[in-house]
Image (cartoon, rainbow, N blue to C red):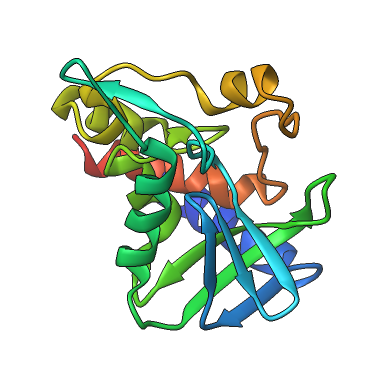
Length: 180
């Protein structure tokens, strides 16, 4: 019965997401650790928040340019691959909120899982894993990116809520199920 229910929910999600979805593909320019530019489109990786380009963090008693390193890490994950981004909304700054992938790699999940971004409405499981391994940002101390922006006159953002909530719910159920 559970499998039948999940199948129906997945079918409904597929049908709902067929309308209004935005797909952008191409070779991106990496703006920072959570923003890409493809052609005229600026894409904000939904559900994550990476340090700002000028943000400095601390690790082992030393300062390090965590914002620049997050940007470089995203660029390394992409390499020369084309990126495919799928989203269903724009943020208040006109950026497309999307999940992006290079090949089969979910860039949003990978940035959080590698410790170069924090969960920002999604990807809590990946963040918990990065924290436990003290990966990236979690190997030292840092200001949450939104707190850093607030103190330095940056854009005010609230955690992202994927408007395609059924797919988000199913992804969370799948993650919980496979981590058993």
